[in-house]
Length: 278
Length: 298
Image (cartoon, rainbow over all chains, first blue to last red; front, side):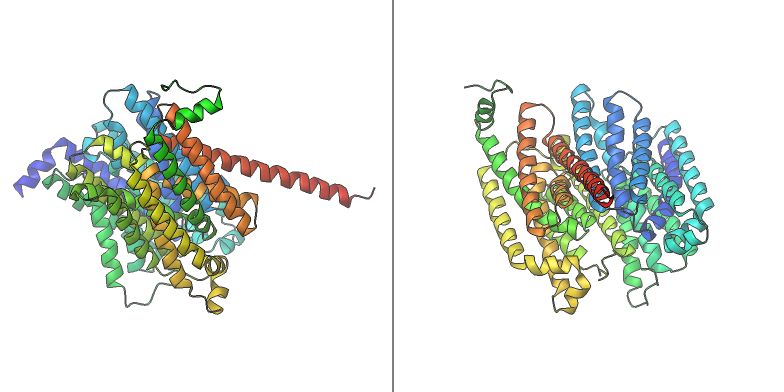
């Protein structure tokens, strides 16, 4: 216990816990709606955009955060605009993000050949939760908290629009605007989560807790909070493991625990009647 | 003759490209990969399984990283991981209505993230060779050996032969799974075989383009061709042609510049796709104008 207490005293762990908790909560909340709306592929695309955005900013000598958030939000809005005409075609999403990723490879080359230290490129891919400065941790936590609040505010109409868009539209819910706003929130979450678990792994924080929560309960709001809880729990447990085993990159235990929770949920609910919206 | 860089003399450029054996091997491998990725990617776009295809492409990264860690052949790791992931995805119940279930995308997303996390773990346990990490992720066309080309050729030939055997019922099952199932087509079995083939194609492709950029050769040529024509045979042929041209142009451009091959392959592929979209839109506009003119009394 005293070992743990002395570890909590370390600033890097405090920053990781503080910002990681809020980012994981935001990922769990956003992820629930992503799974419900079958838009996980869009989040997959955005996670790759996060990589390219960050490296574009690095290659241009700008602040990494600018490229990260700018790229994610722009592409999220573009995808929402394409989807609104009724064709959320996954071939379009796939073609666009394959190219974006190719651009990322280009920026990575430019960045690593122009500077001597080339580890930032890789840390964008796999995250640096223990390397956050006080300012970065605070900014990440504040932004993720904003996402949580916004999502709770639009939660009820968004749920209605996700479950039955036609009826929701008939009842006067602005389905299109909600979808637009929701994808922008996904973009912000992807950018924030990139700092915690990395561009390539954030999909695990978005998809696994939400998938597990949906297996466990069919009640929407219970599943929503459960999803956030599983995400935060995975992050805490993952950080704990990473602290005791320094040779393991912190992102691995976080994602592995989230995946394990999902597997456990699948195993436990095997015999049960499936929820109506599965 | 020594390499002199690119010039306006196309014959000299091509001769320069093929001067070194590693480049000849790269072109051979690129061609094989483009054909197999095009053929299976065409069905992938038709079946709306891009997300599954992307995840299959990604698992080749932990496969290769794990194989390197264990000290066995990376190629074995690529194929073992891709086939294992294909079987997992095939085990997910898929609705017959065509609309993917929401739980399906959650499972695929979790699988993909977990695979990547394992890849990150393997790389850091291995000692974090950053150069090989970017090679695994973004590909390298240098150092493809003759025996690698041979393995690629055998895998591709086997995959294409199986695809030719199941092609017709697979097309039926892809376009209308409910009717196909009613007519006695074994939709589930076909889907499993198809996913395993897609995994093999992804594993083969990722050795050239890297795990992150396989998707370019899988999705872009198919998306381009399906924009241009609705006839299955014609668009399948177009897909393969686009894929091969994209791979050749990408390899040639990468040879003459310092930037990675993945960037050029994705950029040429995406340019083709954008041109196809623009061409289709322009054709539709002309056609509707003619239609409007024909409707008006003279």
